[in-house]
Every structure is written in C-alpha cells, then in structure tokens.
Image (cartoon, rainbow, N blue to C red; front, side):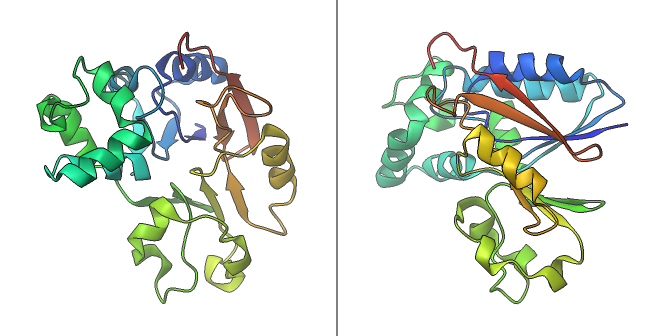
Length: 231
C-alpha cells in the first residue's frame, strides 16, 4: 500500500487522470487530495466527477478543503460581493464547466457536487505527516484549530515549531512552486520539515505547468505536465 498526495488540480481533469495513470494508482493505495479541485482550469466538474467515481469504485480518498472551495461555498451564500470575489478568482471557469453562466447562482450546481464541497476536511494526519491545503499557524496555541491559516497562509516556514511537530512533515499546496524548488525542498526535509507540492499545474509556462504527486512512503515525486487543451 502506498500513500499518495496531490494538490491544486484547478479544473485540470485530463492531467489528473494522466498523473494517476503514471503512478499506477490502485485500490491498494491511499490518496490524499489537498484542495483546490476547482477554478481557473477548463473542467472543474470533471475533476469532481473523477473523485466521486474513484470513491464509488472503492478507492480510499481523503479530500481536504482549499481556499477556492471556500470561496465557492461563500458564493453559494448568495451575497453579491462574495459571488464576485469567487468569479474574479477563477469561478467563472467552474460555472462554465457546469454549463452555467457567470451571472447564475452557484446554488444551481447539482446537489452531489455541493455535498462534496460541504464535506471537505481542514487537514488530515497520517503516520509521519500532517496534510493541509496551505499551511499551519504555529503562532496559534493549537495550530490544528486555526482553520483560516490552513487554506490561506503563505510564507510560514520561519514559524515552524519543530518541538510541536515531533518529527512530522507538513505536506501542502496553495503556493505555486517551480518544479526544481519542490525537488530541492524534498532533499532538505530534515532541515525544514515542509513540502509544497503545488507545481502550478494550471499555469502553463516556465517551471510551472505540472501536477505533482508525492509518495509519502518512498518520498518520491511524480510530475505530470498539463495536457488540458484550453487551460
């Protein structure tokens, strides 16, 4: 059994399928998805469809909340300003993937998708690791109760409390990171026990454009180049 982590898919359903094929994902594996399934890319609906299908087929998945899912949930509250903020951050592409225009209410999205969003977890602990979308607030008395930091924080490595972590590594996404830097971070986990696996899949250019999977047991990285036709 392997434990695999992927983050920041951002509507790139074809690329996600290709990455899962590359790693040979099977029912014997455990998959941790660290949020930002939606927005910006061309097929947010397709990403969630794939996740739901894998669950129905008996695969073991743990799905975390990302800031883009949080924005979409806020937009579903019906306030015009929150709807606008979500659209300005890639929500229009998500609406299009459901066959809806930007002026439509996201509450028109079918219930199974809204249920999926509403059941996402803030973080997940597994042997040797804490998995989260963005990061942890080590200044808080209880970092695992500081919800907003888990989906929004950036530049938090200087706050890391090694004594609190007790040998665990924080694996996260949220901040697009060039592929060479991710590889460099992996080599220095004994110094800075944090790994950002957001390789900027939805951003085609330079060292971005990759969807990354991390094997928590072998500590191997896998990279799949974006193959979407109109991301």
